[in-house]
Length: 499
Ligand code: FAD
Image 1: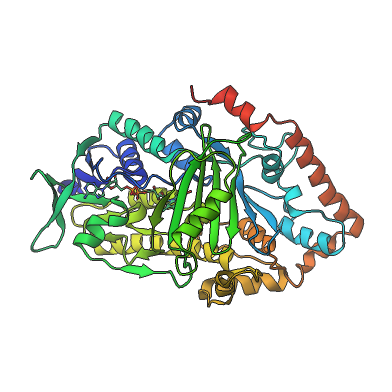
Image 2 (image 1 turned 45 degrees about the horizontal axis):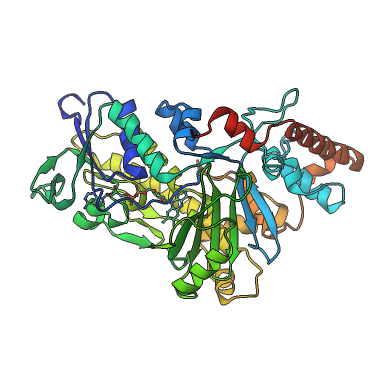
C-alpha cells in the first residue's frame, strides 16, 4: 500500500450507523483521522431498539463492557421474537435464538421432531428450545451451555434505547480519537476528473475534506444518492409496508426478555420492553390503511399509558444498487431499508462495517475490491429480504385483502426454492454465510403452518420408544435448566439496572 494508504475518513451522519462506524474504525484501525459530521437540527430516526445476537460480536470488537452498555442504554435482554396471528388469527409461535434440541449423528433435531410429532410422541417445538422456555417464564441469565449436558445454553441479544445507544457509542468513539463536527451539510463537492467526493461543505461554508467518505446520513442518502445518484432497487412489490407509527408507553408489568410482533389487519405491531419504558410501533401499508386508522389500532394495543404523541415514519423497502460507489460507502438507512420484523437493520450496519474492514481500500479504490464488497452486501440483503418476505407470504388469513395480497404475490426464486425443498422432507440448506440458520427458518415455516410432507428417512433409525425417550429427555433437561434461572427483572436489577 505504502503511500496510497488512506489517512482521512469522513463519516456523514451521527445516528446509530454513524457512531457504530466511528466506534469500530477508531478501535480497529491505526493511523486514521476520523471526523464525524452530524446535524442536531436534522436529528436521527430515533427508532431501532431490537437486535439479534450478532451484536455481541460488535460489542466485543469495540471492547464495551456488556453490563455497562445495558445500564447506559436502559436495555433489556432479548431471547427471540414472539409472533401473534401471523399464520392464522389466534396462532402464536416464537422465533427463538439459539439451538433447539440437539442433532443426533448427521441428522438435525427437527427431523426427529417431525417424526415424533407425526407419531404423537413429541410436544410443542418450543418446549425443546431453552431460549423459548426461559423467555416464556420471563427468566434470564448468561448461560453458555446447560451444565452436564451437550446442549447449548442461552443465545441472546438486547433491546435498548436507540438515542442512548448512539450517545454511548459516541463516548467510546470520541475517547478513541474521533472528532465530531456539528453542522448541516449544504453541498457535496466532487472531483471533476474521478467523480470522487472531495469534501462536504457546511451551511456556514466550512469544507470538510476526506479520502474515504462513509455515508450514514439516513434516508436522505446525501452522498451515495444525492451526489452520486447510485440508484435504488425497490422491493415494495414484495414488502409493501411503507410507514410506521411509533409511540413509547409506560411499562405495565415485568420486562419480557423477548420482542413481540402482532400481525394486524394491514401490517403488524412491535412491542419492545426496555427498563424505563416500552417501545411500540405499527408498521403498515398505506395502500390499505390510513395513518389515523393505523394510530388507532396501535393505541388500542399498547399495555401502559402512552408517554408521547405517536409519530409517523415513512420508508421504502429496498437497497441501493451499489452500497459502495467510488470513494463513498453507505451504511444504515442510506444503504437501504428492510423493515424491522426480524430486527436486522443494526445487524446490517455492523455487517457493512465488518465487510468494509475486510475490504478496506487504499486511495486507488480498486474496482475489483469495491465489486467484491458490493456483491457480498447484495447477497446479505437478498437473503434477509427472503426471510422477511416469508413472514408475510406464509399466511392463511382471510380477514383482509392485505394478507390475501401477500399470500398470492409472486416471491423471489431463491425463496420459492427454499419453501419447495422444505415442503418435501423438511430440509433446509443454508447457503454461503447467509444470516438466518436452518433452525430459524424452521421455526417461522412451521410456526406459520407450512408443514413438510414427510421427514428424512434416517429419523427412522430410532425405535418409537427410543425416539420418545430422546425427545422426552431433552424436554426434561430444558425445563429443569429454565426453572433454576432468576427472573429477567431480577437479573437486570442485580447486574445492569440504570440508576
Ligand atoms: P439516522 O438515525 O437517520 O441518522 C442520520 C444522521 O445523518 C443524523 O445524525 C442526521 O443528523 C445526519 N444528517 C442527515 N442529513 C444531514 C445533513 N444535511 N447534514 C448533516 N448531517 C445530516 N433496526 C434494528 O436493528 N432493529 C429495530 O428494531 C429497528 N426498528 C426500526 C423501526 C422503524 C420504523 C424504522 C424506520 C427503522 C428501524 N430500524 C431498526 C432501523 C434503525 O432505526 C436504523 O438502521 C438505525 O437507526 C440507523 O439509522 P441511521 O444511522 O442510518 O440514520
